[in-house]
Image 1 (cartoon, rainbow, N blue to C red):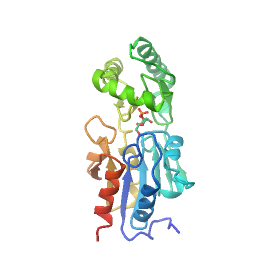
Image 2: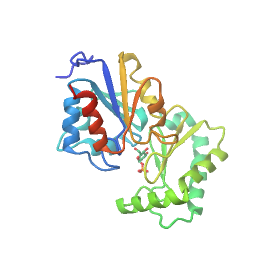
Image 3: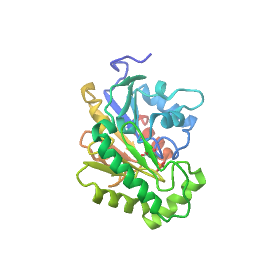
Length: 257
Ligand code: M1P
């Protein structure tokens, strides 16, 4: 039985995890071993995930073997915390569109669509812009790409810097919009107001009185979508290379004595 003030945990520690390539392979389901380890960890500390994706996708990835992601984590933060749950109950949130306003958003979207139309890349699929609650996700190849197409695009983008150039064009065109651009996944980048990176999730737990907050993520380098929360003075950051690496560090940190 989970206590509503977490007094059932022996330590006032929160452990937060990025999702893709930290808890699960990118855009794939988590393993039963990972979920089992997290269940053991949850007996000791409070746990949560902070993903850039929308809640539906993260929920699919972390609902392993019939379990519900919302039942397995104390805090669930999708879209960097703009969609948030505490012990399975939704928390109030702001939205990207009310922040930016319809007129400015229209200009942004029109520019993006023109830019994609003019791009010469090996293949294009569909859904080049995904409108989410707390951010807009932009993909040159399109979000309907298959797993193989994703992998191929990622390799192509590493060589040709398509996304980096796209982001530079947007920064140049909309310098006064107060936006942050983050290349967090394989085929796309996220666009959101400054400060609505993963540190946004930290603001949602400020009043909980945690003595330590750990964060595990793989894109912890400058420009990666874990960078801000990883380097935030409120967290103890752990940079991982894969879900297996996350499990290794968790075992060392929390289960070695
Ligand atoms: O969680 C990291 C990123 O995952 C997806 O990126 P991509 O589809 O490019 O692999 C997206 O959901 C993106 O918003 C998110 O930041």
